[in-house]
Structure formats: C-alpha cells, structure tokens
Image (cartoon, rainbow, N blue to C red; front, side):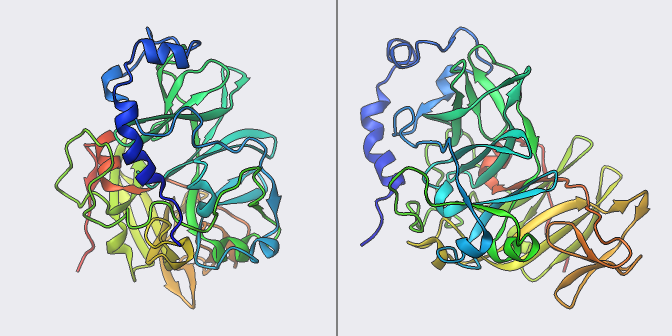
Length: 371
C-alpha cells in the first residue's frame, strides 16, 4: 500500500483552512504572537493544510552510529550532514519529511536542522538569538510555498528559507545559518564512522522510509501554494546549487553537474570549487525514499588554503588538488597528502528547487554547463 500523502492531506485540508482570517482565527490560535509587527505582508502567508504543530518537530533527538543506521538506511539515501566543531551528524530525509524541524544541540551549540520538502530546502541554523535559546515548531503556514516556523518562546513566525522572523516580536531578525549539505548516507558513513545518525526512535509513529510527497519533484511540477511568478530561466523543480560570494549569487543546476564531479570557478573575484557525486536517491520521487531516481549530491567550497589557490581534478574516486596532490572527500576535507586534516570553507547556500531560490533571490545568475 502507498504511504498516506502529506501533500494530498494538504490539498484536502486547504478548503477548511482557507477561510481562516489573519485576525480572529489567528489571534485565537496564536495569542502570544504580536501580529502588529511583521516584515512581510500578512496576506502572503497562507494556511498549508496541517494545523499548528500538525507536522511535529523533533525536540529530543536520539542518535545511533552509522553502522547501526545501516540496518534501515540504504547507502544511496539522502541525509543532511551538519558538522560543528569535531562532531558530525546526519539527519536522514526519510525522517525529516515527516517532521521538518529537529531541535538539537551539537558540540554544545543549540541548532535547528530544517527541511522543507516543498522547496527541497535543507538548512541548519543556530537557534540562539540575543543570548536566548529558542526552539522551533511548525506553524502549518507557508509563504512562497516555503515552511513558516515559529519559536515557542515568543511565538514569532520565521521564514525557513531565509531564517528571518517575519511576524511577531522578533520580526526583522535573522537566525545565523550553519553550513550543511545533503549527501548520500554512504559518503557520510565512510567519512565519519564515529559520527551520529538521527534515530527512527523519535517518539512518533510514522512510516519512515516511505515518501509522502512521491512524484512531487517532477521537473515541470507546479509548486504547491506558490503565489509568485515562476522564473522562466529554469524549470520550477530543477534542483540548483547556490553559491554566494560578496553578495553575488550563482546557481549551478544539478542536471548540469551529472557526470561532472569538479567545477573550478570564480565569482565576484573569489575562487570556488564544486564537488559533486552521482548516485544519491531523490527523497521526493518514488513511493519509498530508497527507490528514488538517481540525482547528484553537490556542495561548494573556497578553493584556497592559507592563501594558496588550489586547482582540483577528480581521479581514482577522489578529489585531488594538483597543487599539493592531497586527496579530498566530498565534504571538502583533505583525507591524505600534505594537507591532510584541513577543511575547505563552505561557500554553498544549499541545494534547492529553482522556483523557490529564485523567488527569494531573483537577481541570482544561472550558469549552464560548458560544452
């Protein structure tokens, strides 16, 4: 049997929630939210179907070793990889599609690991604001098809895509984004055998491994509850790797990175390199995550170490800089050679659906693969 579809539930529920006014109804459900303070028009925020906390965040995450997770997580399944200090953690998308937010503490740092399936947006934030630790839940609302979160301390509403508070006492403030990437579980397990993987023991009964959004990432799919204008430069569901340097943004479509594991580039006078690897499963394609069609995993890094410019090639299943001959993994870490132990600085802003990124960052440059 097919898993119940969250998207179908949203579609069926939207009529019931559609009449909910931004006044009486909101004030009843959100008595602590200061609606007089907002950074965007309230009319842009729409009910998405589920009610407040209808998609429950994970507040007390439990973890297992990569070896333990391999009992239920296949090599090609996508995980969000977060590294803080010397700790590395993986958050499987087969779990995040049902929860969207994990409130966690990594290396003593309070973090929120978030995933909006409708935008394919996997973003990690530090959840400390003005010296106070916040924890987050789901509002059940969307803006530009993107998850709107809320903090439980003030019930301010936050745009997941930008990390900005858009309604409430924190309106106008931004969460600090932390480097994170989506990668295949096999790459995480090989690079961090002592790392931690979010456990299926979440305290909730969900059919983890099934994809409630199956078929959603068809490249020409119409985004759910998206009010903006689709940028015609790319199909709406084309996944793009976003790179930002000195305020300029460049998008590399993932379709162009297939079979192209290295791109040495420069943006705003700053050098970068894209590492990509084919073979990861799409979490939003088939009825089960493990059966998702093959897509690349990709991230981008500053290709300088101690002021020395590196040029990368891909050889013998590894990224190698021709300057020192050091070997690097997909997470930008030197694993052998003179630079072993060094880590490249991430310049990636994540991999997202094109429609979503271009809705929030319309001035972004789109580059196509060179022939």
